[in-house]
Image 1: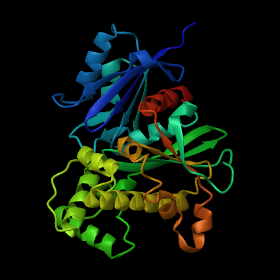
Image 2: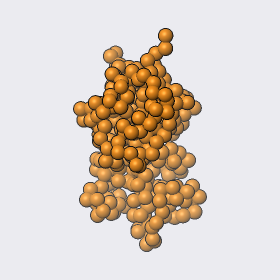
Image 3: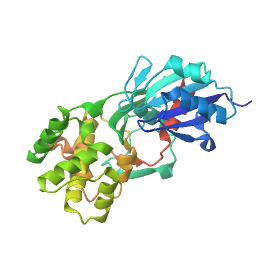
Image 4: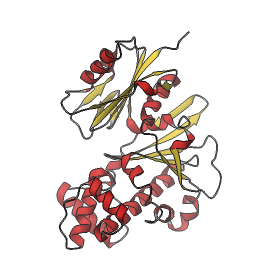
Length: 319
């Protein structure tokens, strides 16, 4: 007998991915991507998707949302949408409903991602510890993290909004950057630098420091970093990777994820070829007397662009 059909959705600030799943496994052929622009909310997207799929009977539905979730109500950080359990149930006809943060979905996907989609970045001084906490750090349109705990009653993935914590300051350059960001936004948060638009802001600061004009978007900045012939782009890449290593190391000491740390998101993946030369591991472990403890945590990059959909399917399967 076939397992009940579920609908899973990964709702970002720009696009929404939707798929069908059975028993915790996503059907790759069912994945569709929709632009959020022009839609008043998630419901029209789900209606269009289900109509294209032949209006199947849906038993469960889970939406992973790029924003805080409070009592089953999600509000996107970078889009004027709200999503709640009742609206998701009405759009899908499902009885089992879950609305979770997108990083929680990534956490539920751990252990269900193909090995060839995991790229080691920092090797730990000791082997992974079974059943220890794991940490997922997302760097894309925004920045966030979630901690994964596996226990006798199942998996618990705790939500956060750590991208809006204060940007760390270690030197005069960091202080200058913080003041540059504060001038425009009144507060310098981690996400204001460690994200796609944050990369553009960081480049604008680096250009100002060099006495040059700035007009590059994130893709052009990454292209310049890839060429390695633009001093401002090089300074931008070095600062981005160092700050990401610093913040990831801070989160590691807070949560002690001996089960591993996983970077996800488009910006995190875009820097894959540059982490080593810009010193990510050094910044990650630069914790003074506790540098040896920071060296105990391995870091990998998740290269599965649909991991959040898998996480939604696992969340429904796990109950």
